Length: 281
Ligand SMILES: *[C@@H]1O[C@H](CO)[C@@H](O)[C@H](O)[C@H]1NC(C)=O
Ligand SMILES: *[C@@H]1O[C@H](CO)[C@@H](O)[C@H](O)[C@H]1NC(C)=O
Ligand SMILES: *[C@@H]1O[C@H](CO)[C@@H](O)[C@H](O)[C@H]1NC(C)=O
Image (cartoon, rainbow, N blue to C red; front, side):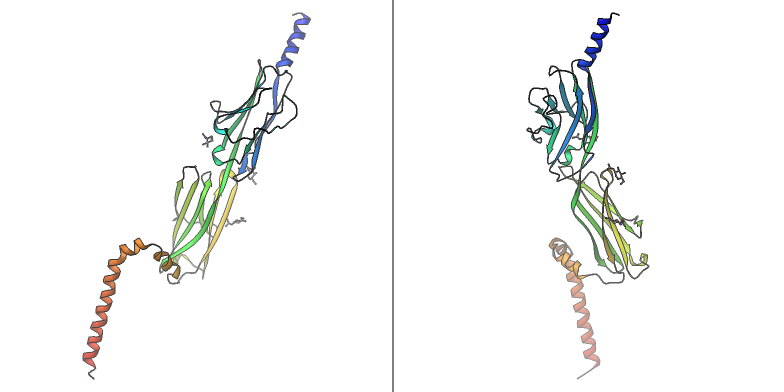
């Protein structure tokens, strides 16, 4: 091979080379965050001609961002309307719009982001996951005391993402009788209610503290609530209030309440009749 040919090959390899050194995508973002910046830092020796930069979401079928300098970047698909189009991460013409500034990211933008930079001859790509999690709201742990000897521990939380785990525990041991019900709304957010019935016989101390632990394992998020139960107490006034708020249940029980009531009245009448006959005036 001639010297000039080697020089040409070297120069050409350099003129089309593209190399991503670093991709910056935050792996965990809490819902409510004002914005996130996904940055793909690359170097190239090419001139403006032929440089194309793209971002994909969850695989190469789903293009979300494309920039062909010196044109303006285009936001498509999932990110359409969610990106600050004026955001420039650099003043250099070939670097200016390499990053995406996503405003108010929501949980549905969780997934795998891939940055692809290409010239006529070469291409480089890097991939990173981003999880936008929601620690939820209305996380409560309460007791429902409807019956003597029994208490129902109820733990609820709403608007969680991704799928939560809920455990009710006592002295560090999970209650195996706990039953969870999970629902997902149309936004993909989870609501959960977990109930565990505890019998007074299982409480060995004068009182017992129960913990409800809510976690989003992939988001490294954990929160807990506690409640203290005193066994031996009678069903509480709270229950009465709870039942008044549910008139349909009262109606359903109406008949039996009435008949019990009339039996008591009847017994009273019989008793007074007996008393009257045995103690004449
Ligand atoms: C993207 O991928 C992630 C994980 O692979 C998945 O949980 C998520 O539902 C996907 N999102 C969409 C919109 O397809
Ligand atoms: C979760 O927490 C552990 C321990 O604190 C840490 O090593 C890990 O990097 C965290 N994971 C993420 C995704 O932040
Ligand atoms: C409850 O959460 C706190 C931190 O929020 C933690 O230090 C504690 O260990 C947790 N308790 C249990 C029983 O999980």
